Length: 144
Image 1 (cartoon, rainbow, N blue to C red):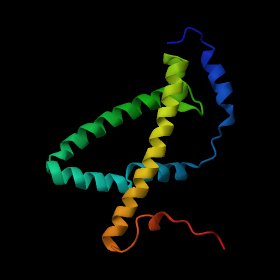
Image 2 (cartoon, helix red, strand yellow; image 1 turned 90 degrees about the vertical axis):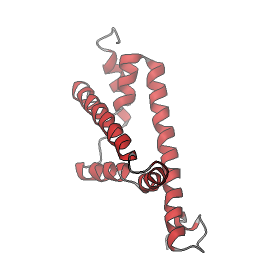
Image 3 (cartoon, rainbow, N blue to C red; image 1 turned 120 degrees about the vertical axis):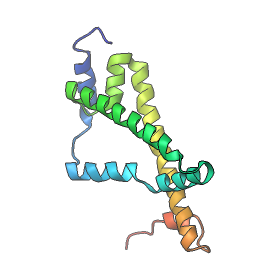
């Protein structure tokens, strides 16, 4: 833990460029969409196909771990409300390198998750439209 009690104030000042502009409704929809995405169903079907329905036990264990982790994160958010969230907490409690690593590992996970979601959508579309190329569902037509 950091010895400097004002150390967190410096982190908050640096993170001041971030804004709380999303409503609670939008945040709820983002959370639901992130938790129940197309990749979850595609991955679950693959895992159940190989290991059987006992996979649900491992999902329950993973859900329990996630629930405990989110409870801990909620406690830190109450103690230190800031826009930088868990990257700021890692920096304050573990040091600048930990804060850097947490922030960029989160960014990497989000970038990879977007790619896997697009791939899952292409797989689903291929089920209904076998002749459709894999890139077509992700194609964004220009605005007219």
